[in-house]
Image (tube, rainbow, N blue to C red; front, side, top):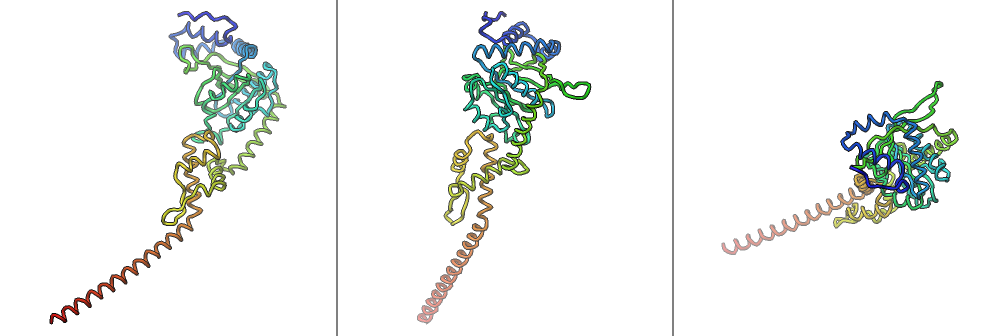
Length: 352
């Protein structure tokens, strides 16, 4: 098989390299790619990556990349240096203010982004994994058109990415230390889509980035600490966003969230209306579907607990009303029976 002839200036250097390699190795397995990637000189692959990013700058394109790996493996450090490198290539500064932990703040920043700005979405695992992960964490494709238009770059860091819609995907491998125990540079494996299967990401080669400068890291720590402080102020020590938003929405929209039943009880309104109110207040993208179900359940629980005493008193009043009605019915029935007996006695007396 021969690839269609493409001029060198029509596709990026790394894509051309990967496509040609894939076509020449159609029968290779995933393990074959891994063995080959480990043999490629780190400097060669790193230089090719930098060359590719420069080509994208020159041709009106952008970079959307991700870094995944376990906690403490250097994900954030690698992403920060990538941001600094892109800032150097695209000519727009990358500062700690371009690092975001909350997806809604990132969305807001992107909507107001300047030409060629670079952003880092740093996944903070204590509040953004599992059921409560925002959909932004799972799919970068939502940003692609918006980012490409103004050549904005996005780097995404997470323990485990759910969807790879972009071209550059890195996986942390090593932090290299000097003789004094100080970290000096980071090694990550570059993975890109296979030419014959865009959903299959294969190993290409190791990328080496130095540790970012101390000044940036000090600023980064301040941004991260401010984010954690904000989370604790919102969610408390458990960092529970469901409880936070349930209380907030209920306090603001309580009148719309409750209804009076025929019997006089106060109860949560029907599901469709609660769902509509939630969307009005926080939109449709803050949680997963499962998260929204939990949020609705928590709102119903708050309402039920708040009006439990009122409903209990109403239930007691209903019981008393029913008891009184039963008493009246019994008296009416007893009177009727007594009258009927009198009529029978009078009839019997007449007959005699």
